[in-house]
Amino acid sequence: LHQLYFALLHQKVKSTPDRHCFCIDEELSYENFYADFGPLNLAMFYRFCCKLNKKLKSCALAKKTIVFYTCGDRKKQANAAYLIGSYAVMHLQKTPEEAYSLLVSQNASYLPFRDASFGACMFNLNILDCLLAVHKALQFGWLDFSKFNVEEYEHYERAENGDFNWIIPGKFLAFSGPHPKSKIENGYPLHAPEAYFPYFRKHNVTTIIRLNKKMYDAKRFTDMGFKHHDLFFVDGSTPNDAIVTKFLNICENADGGIAVHCKAGLGRTGTLIGCYMMKHFRLTAAEAIAWIRICRPGSVIGPQQNFIDEKQASLWEEGDVYRQQITEQENGSSKAAVAGILSGVEDISINGTNKNISQRKTPSEMEEEEECGGLTQGDKLRALKSKRQSRASTGSISPVTPSCADTRLPQCFFSSQAFCFQLLDSLCFPSQAKTLSGKCIDSDSSPFSVKSLFGDLNRSPVRFAWIQ
Image (cartoon, rainbow, N blue to C red; front, side):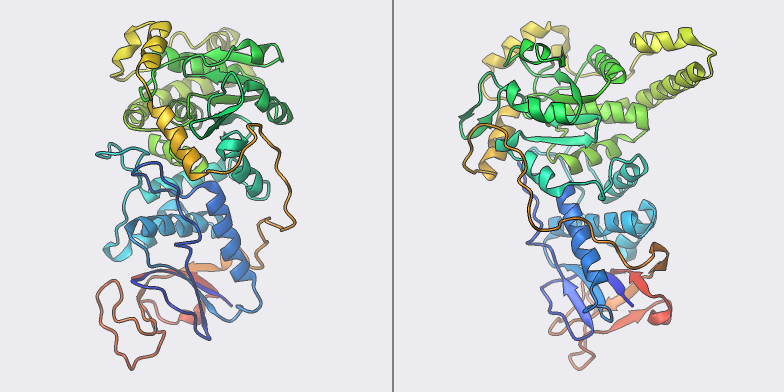
């Protein structure tokens, strides 16, 4: 029967006859844009779950204690804690608060995640925010590894294959802005609208929303049966209230999936999708940002984070009214109220201060201003993503080539109810002089000793523990 532990250590350690130790510090590494360092994306979380479940399922390790550890810097520690905490929420049926309480036991602390920019961090995203986001994604059916195709995710998130990710499966797809002609510019593969048609049709994407300046003729989408909407606001800025309301109205009335893009499909795109998530699913701003970044790293940047936070209360209120009126419609008692919803919820305003001074200008004036301003935030982010993913490209979006390897999540042989959380006060490895808590280890002591604060370690078949 297994015991599962999480450890923060100073250096790499080897497994022993009765303990199996593993680390993913080098195997799963975040690809940063600027000063951002996590959280690790959905594919990496999936691969971690596969790896850990395989170990727990292994007959060869059946009688061994499983120790997941990190010996990296504080950024690596934060990502490792996010992975094991999310695993506990997803597979051990623990609440986010229960998992987080173990991760921060004995006054442990982790670096908060930040946005894809340089300079002072304007908004901290904590591990608990990520665990809450994973919990909400499970609750609403956005996260289901039995249906998740990791190869497809990793294929299409690459610049040469379209640079897109589903944020809410079947509802919102975030992607990099199309170009008039498929080509490679400054090392970044650009795709014409037609390159997306096969995938969009196959996955019932019916609506495209463009948030950046017009780089292609919208008729190339509409002539092929797609609905297309323009809601321009300046790269790196926040939308005004009219844009938010129009965006929500479009999405609430769309029949199929909605593909949203700005220039890089990160900042403006993530901001408006986050607004929808807060209104219709009552996510907090931090939960929305966390989930969007887990799906599409680098999303929501700078002042856009604070904008979403400021809109949380009013969007929750608007969502409550919307759901109440939908309920009245289903009960057949208020058709007039529902008509108001479908026309844009005229009687509800989105409150909050919008510091985007460019909102006073017309869309055409703002587009001209952006075009004359040289490289924008979106240009730089796209260039960085392409540079780190450099690979020969034809300029077309190729389909996924199935692998012979079975990457489906293995089924665990144990019941989630078998897991029991316990807090341990020390963990000693061979040749390790100190634990992180600074306790000295006697060189003559057992090469791997565990002291429990709660008595017999063998009382429960499987355990997850935070160790310091």
